[in-house]
Picture 1 (cartoon, each protein chain N blue to C red):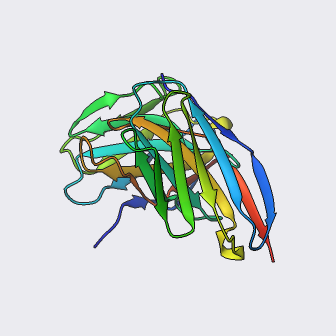
Picture 2: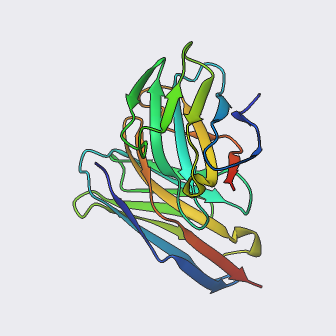
Length: 114
Length: 110
């Protein structure tokens, strides 16, 4: 079956611009996660959704970062006024709710801010 | 919040030897501990996981042990092969709230 997909696979933008990164979870998965991975580091938690609501957004680094999941399926991570330090691979994952903890990762979006 | 420490950051072994990677976690409420393998430029893939009601789990050449009292868990790979070379991440989770370690780069030399 179809796995988690993310678009675009690569995004190059200029400092100060706005970007949107999209995640399509596995059908039927109610939990959706966003992580940021810098070179040589583990996935850094940003936010996770249970259904439409953000269950935990404590990992968002500042108010330039925002994520939505309006219909409980597709999610968009939005970054305003991008900075060079935002350059990283942004990973999305999904899982069934509650005890089905296994997270299935998407291929990631590589964001480069020039 | 949960904090996961992982050691070593790099590990080099000879083909056929065993490799052990260790992690500690801070939140005693964590009840799910997966291990992911990530090859260069690819997405993390789950290789084995363990829940807090189990002390050890094996799957062929891979095993994971969990010590809840000490809040640490380990990944053991036996009879390593060159294709085991990758970055391995541990994680600790309570329900769906998961935090990852910084990763171990394993190199298996033929």
